[in-house]
Structure formats: structure tokens, C-alpha cells
Amino acid sequence: MDNYARIVRDNLARLDWVNPERIAVRLPARPVADGLSFRAFGRDCLLSERGILLDGRPEQGPVGILISLYAIHCAPEPPAAAPFKAFKELPGSLPYVGAFANRAEAVLTAYIDRLISSLDVVKKTLDGADPPADLPGDASVVLWPLPKIALCYLLYRSDADFPAAATCLFGANVEHFLPTDALADVGEYTSRRLVELIGG
Image (tube, rainbow, N blue to C red; front, top):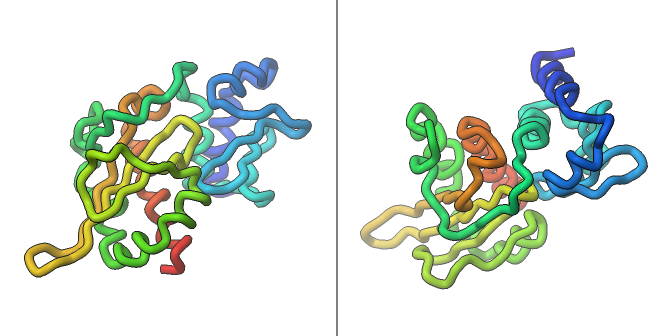
């Protein structure tokens, strides 16, 4: 068993599997015969004491760690999307700002035009929605990589004065559902999923 798989196993062991309905209410998730079902990173997720399945396949890597951390930390309160805020506004974000900018935002700049033309597919896969009308950018979209984690992507095409750019904002109360370092990773792996969806 590698380190990632061990962390996933240890995290799942911290959950109250004697009362799985309490976990289900917090996430939220749907109780099924084999565990708890919900959507994660645009895939069907089955969470159980035995492990995590995404689209029926075992997930024991970094995404599995994020899902298990979400199950541990997710508060029972409902999520609030707007007003969205920058990653640097999250508590304790300073050590992760540079890495977040590179791994969650800069990684998308080569794909801006393709992302904008593929927003319908992106929204369908990642439980997306239209953003508030007053947000800047040539296009924008709100995505829900985890049931209570809202990310808003602002996409800017290149022009004569500026290169293409992407900004990833977070829902108003995301810090109640995951620690800040894990939220940075959610941004990174959601952006990777976006690139995967458009064939990048």
C-alpha cells in the first residue's frame, strides 16, 4: 500500500461509520447499499468504510485524499456561493498562493478559447451553473467539484494588450468544508479535470 492509499484509509477510519446517516447529511450524500453516493470532480463517487470509488474504480491517489478530507471536515451548514472570493482571501492561504496561481490558474491559459467554446460540456460534467451577471471576463462559469465546494472560473481571451488568463474564485464559506491547503488542491485538480474534458 502506497502513502496516498494509506492516508485515504486512515482518513476514512476517522469517520463515524456506526452512524453513516450523519455523514450523509453533512456532505450531503445519498445512502446506498454499499455506502454513500454523491458527485465528486464530475464523477459518481461511492464513499464507504472500505474505500472510495469514482465511476466504479478505486480512487487511492490525491483526489481520494481530498474526498476523504471533505468527508471529515465538511460542516453541516449549507454552502454559499456568492460573494465569491480569491484564494488569497482564505485563512492561512499565504504559503500556497504561488502554487495555486500556477497549478489552478496558469495551467488553463493555453486552453482558454477551447474552454470557452466547451462550457456547456464543462457545466454538464462538473455540475456547473451560470455565474452572477456582474462578474468580469470574456466568459465565466460556476462549478461544484464537491457538493458544497463552489469554484467560479473567470476566463479571459488574449488580445492586443493582454495574454489569455484564468482566475479561480471560491464560494463564500468554503473554509467551513475543507482546510485551506486542501482547497488549493481542489482548485488544482478541478483545473486538471477541465483540461482533461477538453482533450488538452
